[in-house]
Image 1 (tube, rainbow, N blue to C red):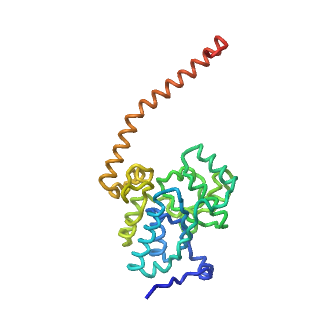
Image 2 (cartoon, helix red, strand yellow):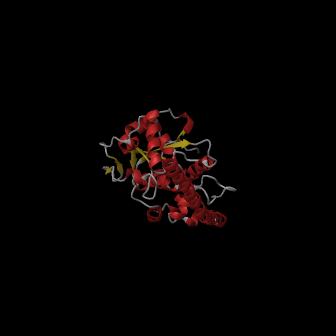
Image 3 (spheres, one colour):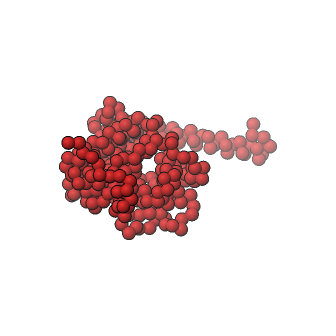
Length: 279
């Protein structure tokens, strides 16, 4: 007999106090949060997914979400029924917001900050959502922007302090439930609560090769650096080490070119001051 989801808009509105809205990417961090909320906390979950149609891994991420829900339906049906249908929105359909995009660009000039945060801030505003959970963890690049500007929520997670008015205010509509977790910490918690096998079905690579992680894209590199190298096959680890080796070889030459460029600039300034010409 075909299962019919018990979720509808009225159900979600009635249980709003027990429903958590989560950006679910099919990756380790957001899947951990979805599974923990549904299985351990017994909460209803409203998952959101922003699809980047330019990224080859988008279909693989959606497949991972589908596989995870299928496993959950078999092993923990009650938790499965707490998860509403996935709300999918193409990134190019999110309304433009020059103010948010400008703030994101200024933040990006200070340190690396993925383009997805521009999308997400505009998405949350367009949906008038003020509690969308982002599964940012302690090793994420975004952590450095949030540190010093956050406060703890009644649920034990974190959110931006309401008094924040600078460019960081684009994150005011989000909550960060696992901000002080690491990937290895999540793995141990998943093992303790019996859902590690499901969590291992997640996907992370942006540029898969023959359906397997590439070992060279940023998520693959982060996975290795954050203690999850076991998730990459041997071929991917070979590419990872090759990438690091090439960068290590190139680094001195890049530094040398930079130094020569700086010398040329100083020479021109000297000539200009002494002779009135930089030629």
